[in-house]
Image 1: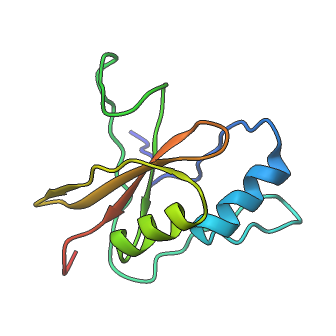
Image 2: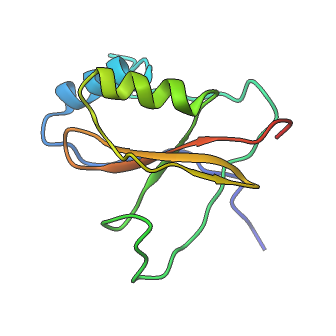
Image 3: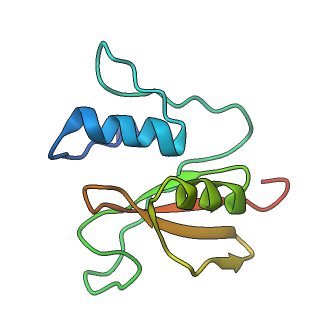
Length: 120
């Protein structure tokens, strides 16, 4: 049986692609390549990309999907987003799987920020 080998990309709609790409560049540091309009993340440390289906009635995120971005310092990233005027949840979550925080982009897409635990 053939199997997928990983996540090849994350794609979503935007009302104004140039504006939203600039927002992600300015607030999350995602350097969008202007020739094709995206960014290719490469792993610089050990890690994995998680795939998981949630129940239709989950309250963990609105809509049909959520993107989880890995960060080195959750508190610094949340502070940076707040300084930039982003909508940031006040709540964070600490768990054995790491630290989590949430924010919303200008198009209303809620995303999750994840700081892995040390050594992971």
